[in-house]
Image 1 (cartoon, helix red, strand yellow):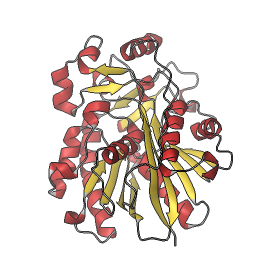
Image 2 (tube, helix red, strand yellow; image 1 turned 90 degrees about the vertical axis):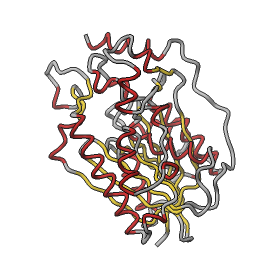
Image 3 (cartoon, one colour; image 1 turned 180 degrees about the vertical axis):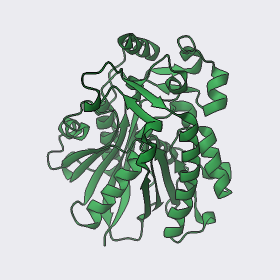
Image 4 (spheres, one colour; image 1 turned 135 degrees about the vertical axis):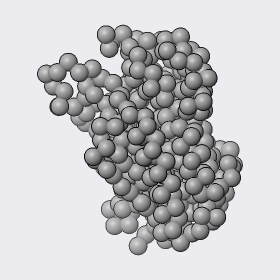
Length: 352
């Protein structure tokens, strides 16, 4: 059976930044309140479509892998904030990339979407249905936020991260995969106002979250998944070189680290810069970790997440030889014409 290994990576984070202090001018909160409860200092707010962020992240991942869009067999976009319900965001990305040889579909597992997508890419490669998969986690989740709901308005940000997953006969890449879900907890983290359920109602678009239930579930399941993924890969916990967890809350990340008995440098965190970008957090963090030299050839990684559904998952990955990109691109999104805070204010006005 062929193995699936990551050969390219990239990220796309929109330019507009909203700091905690700026957010406090429109939300009943403060920098101290947000930082102590979540570890977040700022977040990015997109001025372009979700598919635009996903496409740019995908282009950077392709350049890093030294590939052309026509080399890709399948495009998977993990997102819960698609441009439209129909068609998939992946189809828009395929068109914008010119990846005309690729099949394309979205996957929605909330914040666990990237890990679920990685399992799908692994399966496509293992069954010879694809040799090269472009997997993207991309979210424009600030579009769902209600600035009058402090418990959610301060937590989320926008961004995209992408990886190229290729077939290999070498004993590298994905070594184990743990996936799970508990649909009985669905109402603890959801978005109202979207879907056929709300046709004919006055329900407005907003993220609704029971923070305590999400926190408890994330701490337990992310810890269990990390340990189990290592066990199935036949690693001891001390064999793990770096854990890249979903970036939802620094207290959750710290709890996972304590569960492993690991030092801080073995668990990657960048939540202070981006907030929770849902399915994009792991690929953004993976890309940054590589840029920072935190990953070396042969390193043993755990990618682990927990999200709406509830869903959870983890993958044990042995990194290949490549830790620097084969190529880069200079393309950027167009300059924003308004500030990130203005974008959020404009959306809030639409709620009223």
